[in-house]
Length: 65
Image: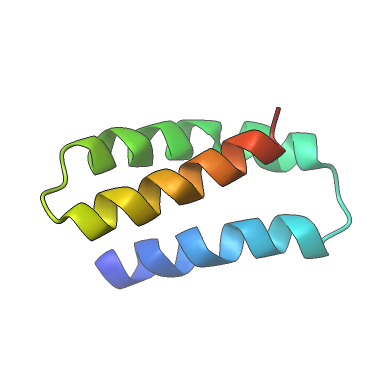
């Protein structure tokens, strides 16, 4: 399950850039998952996971403004 989560995290931004589809659909479709992931990162212990996850979420959120 954890491996699948990382695969999804790493492929979603690339899929949004490559697909040529609406960024709005990608952003709306992943909003809840991004919020859930951000909340999970806030309780994670290893600092590197929190830092890299927070950076990823910030980048995706910036693209979805």
